[in-house]
Image (cartoon, rainbow over all chains, first blue to last red):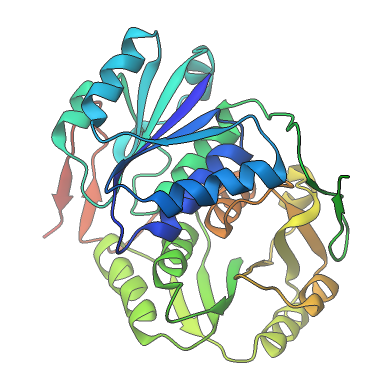
Length: 168
Length: 168
């Protein structure tokens, strides 16, 4: 069980980056994404539409109180893993042992409590990069690929060009 | 030698996503990023400032004619690798053999010629995701990490919290 918590969404600046976070969470094997920060209905809808077209299971929701959210997941036995450029190197084998994980990715400014509330503060690279990138690399390394169900659309991989099948 | 070509930048929609592409290219070991699409001086400046603060070598430039750019890199012996959700699975060992690579990442709409001009059309996952994610996973798998030089700032990895050293 892999859940992603995206902190500090801002309506004015973040719709595309936050959308990419949601798409990556789904595509690379997480079970859900929870958005915090400013409430953005069209962001949630966009991800839901992707699930309807390309398959699930994957869920998306908004949660105003991220501290409560972290505390709840901890109670349910999830390890809290914060992805940050300030953290220590990713230890794949250590991470893979945990069956339940809440992966936190920040926005522009992450509050100090997040570092304290997390079991792990993990960096993909100790250089400025991107929450989308950190999430992608982490899931690619630590999460098993998922088989999508109930998809209306499916890609058939091609050496050149595009091929998409629409299921009837 | 790893170069990244980011196609189809749009001033109105893409500054943050394109910035993330540049940061990821630098952080995960590429040597340069070339932006095509609409010319965006502040995008180039932003990446240059990151190099000045966090170290290099890494270069960034704009190129209006992406077809010419691809042809030139091919002539110089670069393998052309297009990252696309429609492509075939990444074969790490095959990719790692190439010393010189031009990695193409698309914008919203990638023109059919790109698929034809590329030696490889490679997918990280045959699901909608993100060019930032595709670039991050590809570089993480296929590119050797870089030692940065002339940095004014350097992170000291921490289990909890942040530590940044400013070099004098």
